Image (cartoon, rainbow, N blue to C red):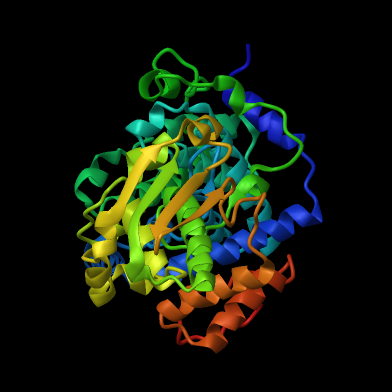
Length: 443
């Protein structure tokens, strides 16, 4: 029987690509561009940039590593639910920088990105639920997506695709242990996945062979890293592309907190209409799926990162302040919100209703008891999911918010947005469009 990677190559080759698919890919690229710019302004971003200037060196692989790491810092990058991966921060850095390096047209970059998403998400769906308890899927499945994007950009053969994924898979890595003490390791996962996948493809182009059975082999990816893999997911039939199943995140926190944030926004509005003050809240109950609690049940966050991974913090913040922004997780805002009395009034518990629907639906139910009344909201599909998408205007609003956080002037932000969304497929990517001091021009 032919290997899964060979079957996957042929499966993707049979899929039709429409103008709508390519347009949506541009929209996801715009979202990634905002995340990348915002990442530079963070503490982790400054460390990465300082390291890169001092020790990182130069070259395509280093550019890709840094771009991927930076775009995964602010917790604003997209999320594919079924695979629990963030494809943008891994795939787009490879397709963007390799396209620019090869001086290929922008249309090739968009098509390669769409296919890179497909590979990453399909393999991410196949790893099984147990994998995610120890391994970070964005890192482990991401290495395949980045390799695929590079393969398609370089117009490599089926055999070279198989080699590239074989050599990418043997480099798959990324452990959740950093989360226990809110260490800064997470962006390294995206950086490594993007750079290692790129390297695997570049070496395949030179003839470096990789195993065809990297996924299903007796000493392969599934056997080594996955307790309950689902290999059929790699080549399962579906009518569209995985990118169209991917969610765009409206809030700068772990996606597992978003259904509860949505519910908190609804409850806040109900309380305002009823004239009930936040100070009158007696207690709050969050019911959600088990994975959300396993990853984000943290009633005592003490840093920017841990606050973004605290469902209690995110709900308390939203009830008190409304729509959460990046500034609410930093500095004085972080200190005020994490020491709020409201935080101590929040209890969480698993609800099997939402656990059984996960990962296809990420749901939550919020009860807030305040002023002698019960305010509640249920979320089945979080804002930004394909069933509850953000609008084009909301996407642009998010992008401009990220660019403002990055201290990029509005004129420059408009120029970047216009180029990504509307440039001709035949144009080439400018050398450095994310430099806020440069006026972006098309070639």
